[in-house]
Length: 631
Image (cartoon, rainbow, N blue to C red; front, side):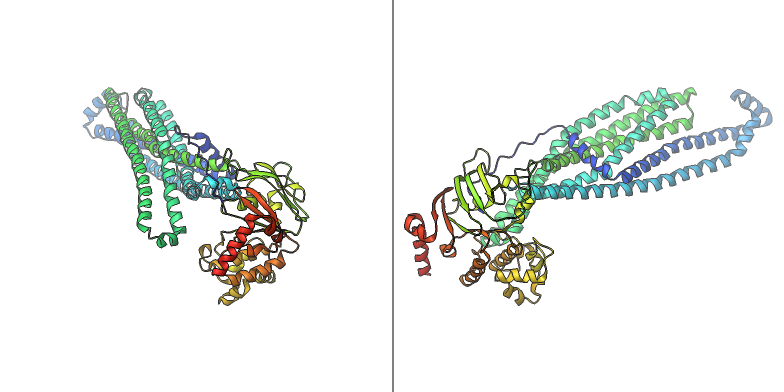
């Protein structure tokens, strides 16, 4: 297609700064699609965390039992006269001490079994939580990719003109994966950290409020540090994704244009271009890692400060007799439960920053305004006669740009063939792009059977238009699959008839696998002329009322062109056809020929009329005739 006059709009500057929690929140709404998995994973996490919180209580009981009975054993092993004195000083009942000593083994066994039981329960529910959270995240990633693909498919050509393929691919792959990892790991880890931290602080306050108050001031300090790191990390991860998109774009362009690279011996230059893009990505990732290399030492420093404070103040309480050794050990274990979430926060902040950046990029596509879409109340185009009219059409590829078509007016009666001639950039492809609403006019109207195409649903409009573009695109699969692309339910007889009409049947049957021959990636196993004829057959199978041929015989030799042209002459009967051709010889029989120059129709009429009235057309004709004579 001729897009020489088009210039891409400048991309909007991305807002940098605080993590985009709004975009992240929108992605979490996908959890509502899977309530069972969401509730199951959450309940499993709560039960597993509760089992974890119970263990230090049992440890305290074991330690206090051991210490108490060690003391009892020591006193009961003294001589009888000394026992009474020691028991009196310690306020100990010797009978109760003996009973406690006798029951100690059963108490230890019971406490140990309960610990094992809770450990098993924690393991089972942790497995359930992990399994369900991963299943949940995979399902959400599946939905996000489907939604993204559906949106990208429906976005206007103008959007794709402004955005690189590599960037779109990264958003549907790497950005979705980062969001999936956060939902599968970071989100539940954050919930677990919140439950563990909140439950631990409550237990600690009930156990020893004075000692808890020693640790409590450290938590706001840690939270401020994490929030600061999160605000710094968010824009860094946005830039990582942008640079990764550039790497992907470079790779995609080189793989698609490998023959061109080799033809121009540009391997070294392209290797350098790829090296520069990957080096830029490496530099940004090193910058991110440098930031987080400061975060984790801060975490450990804060944790060590808290542990030191507990050792000192707890030790003083033990010496003062207001704290037992078992309570101190329990407090130390719960203190670990305070610092585990703080340690996890570093990882959670990292995942959240990455997910926030990725969510913003994903929903940037989801929220992209579609320049061409069904307007409210659009009607279906049912029975089609094929009358096409351009009424005072002016078209710009982007707002404020120079018009590539200016005040174009013409009409094509049902069954007429309209040929478009002109130099590159004259506006031929722009005209045919407006008929199926690949773009919308800037001014004026394009009408089919009296309906403004903007009043029709896109689906019904395009179902009646067969298109063979200048740039042939085939999809991986067989020749049969590609011919039947627009009508997957077509019969073999219909597919063969379309191939015969496009002069493709003979070369297809010459392949050992016939219509089941794989075409390879982008039709690599077929020649240019073969691909073009398959594309023509694909359009003809639709039996369209309006046919658009964008220089569709440019990739074939003269003999094949003659065969295709004979078939097209027959097939165009009864259809309104628009033909772009470089050679006048292919459109001599057109009902109407439009000669375009710089977006204006400078001449129109039949071949005979133009030969008499249009010096521009006559010059083109004679120059091509002289060229054909030379050849």
